[in-house]
Amino acid sequence: MKFLKWLFVTLIIAAVTHGALLYFGPSLIMSMAMGRISSAAGVNTMLAPPRPTAQNNTIVRSSPDLLYNVCVYDISQKPLRISAEVPPGTYWSVSFYDLNTNNYRVINDGQATAGAVLLVLMKAGSTAPPPAGAEIITSPTERGIVLFRTLINDESRLTEIDAARRLAKCAPL
Image (cartoon, rainbow, N blue to C red; front, side, top):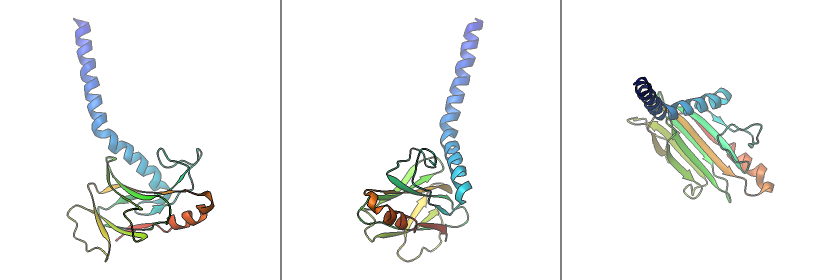
């Protein structure tokens, strides 16, 4: 009988632990990543880390064939203005992640036909007027990460591609 009680208590603890990890895990993981990134650049500011290597990896599962820009955002007070040049002739994308690690919007070089993007990231219900020509993106959470990826498709273009990606900005509106 003692064994059945012990087994029942163990199963209850396991179920509660499993549920708590499923519920709190994504936001805990994202908070840790955001803390690590914002300690290097701050919040609502663009970080352009060097090309990833095994020694300087800041982005989870990064590729040495890509250059990254990352902006930890907090739009609780003001919307965020995001601008970037899209380098021609290579893959480029910007992805938006909420506090629960959900990717809720992606724009790539095929969609950014003007050679540049101007985006305004705001929380639901925000009424701030966006700049002319800006695309509005509504975040499901007030905090999260904006991640840019640019492919180095030709090593001889590395300087040109890196210069274009360093023009990316994110700042409160």
